[in-house]
Image (tube, rainbow, N blue to C red; front, side, top):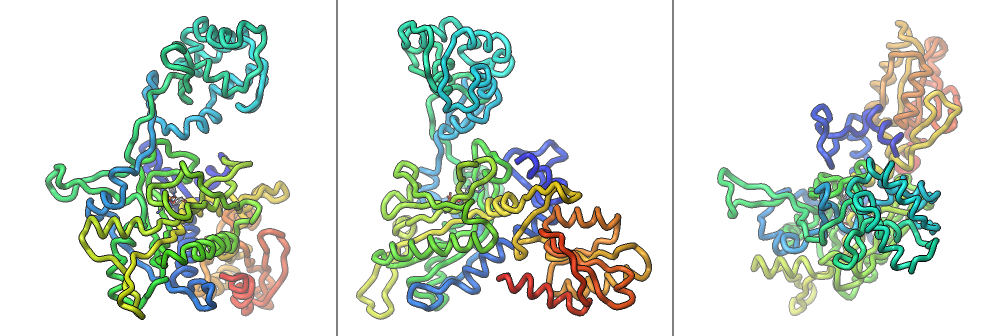
Length: 536
Ligand code: GAP
């Protein structure tokens, strides 16, 4: 992952926000190529959802329209949606270093923590799930050496004799005890077992953690000049609510009828306690959400339909089947709006930091009639749908919601594309699907000589009408190929002395590095065939 993050910075995909001031945790900026990549994914989602929506089970295209709602809405909307009362994570604070942690992330963080790795090494274990023979001499030696520096808050480091006594007592004085590293860590974090029971240590310093407490993830602000309880407002934590708030406006102002969808792409904000893994979990990110309104009797059919469609989408932008999986939420994972109904399933991607496991890319939830019912009750507006063929039939539609992360999608595309190849000067290339590549082609005059550059400029002006294309004149040709490989440009066209004589150019294909010559006049149709022909 380190190499991917450094490539993203070096080549202008993604930068830490406010970097010259030391950054700000959980916020990222997209550079010149990152914004192109993000826009390609965003535009493709919009096209597949709103411009050319999929063919439904009855053989006709489904109906989907778009909205672009305000980020700040009336705060009552967030009370109705359940976000003011319920959008919270259980949090724990370390009593020693005072760091705040998401309770459900503590063990994942411990697995990655430097002091846990060092502790496991002291017993020859490579994994916290490994079973090992525990020897208190090893633990004591580690506590007096590396432990002192890496985990000063750990009970074992602060009070080794008392801490080690609990394990000795529970194993009834056996000379050797076989336990997993995880089990041993709980003993090593415990000083007062009779009072506290076994403890979970802090991933940062080893200290003991407070009981979990709810922490609301919404960013709060004030609207207007007065800062008081009455002027509190929230930055939206999901784009979905802006859709529910406009459901009636859309029905009244357009010709859509149930079943239909409303799509929205935009920023969402969550005051994540532990933003991490680059742009995977950040505090400001973008979502691509569809709320699909249907009759409750058809919810299962539409849920299965969107499961299939959304997996097809991710494959069509270049993610491989081997790196994608569907996973049903366990009942204790379900969000407040999906507790009833058919539940939620995630489309997961195998990110380098989750491998061999997977991480969430998109959630597909059956939100039932939760949101519209809540908004109807809280606002007093009538949100029932009247069957156009029978006005005695009224109901609140159910909702199937495919909610994808645009920022996470960008990360998945970059991770999928990152390909090490020692044979080429750059040592790697980005194997983007051509439709996602920030630049579809580069025009490279072999030299900065008078004859090459004007021909290259002419070709560039012609091609840029149809494709995002780079005109790259400086540096030797090898370095320019290397740069294009690193930014994932599928085709490079080189103008040389032969071009001056017979108007042919060399085409170099990114993945194979194979070269062929074609006439300058054919470059545009070549790109249309190679790129548009592949489903752009
Ligand atoms: N409206 C439903 C909803 O917001 P979610 O699972 O919380 O559901 C949908 O979010 C998607 O948004 C996720 O699958 C993920 O891709 C993305 N997402 C959520 N939190 C994120 C964060 N902190 N940073 C980046 N992406 C995030």
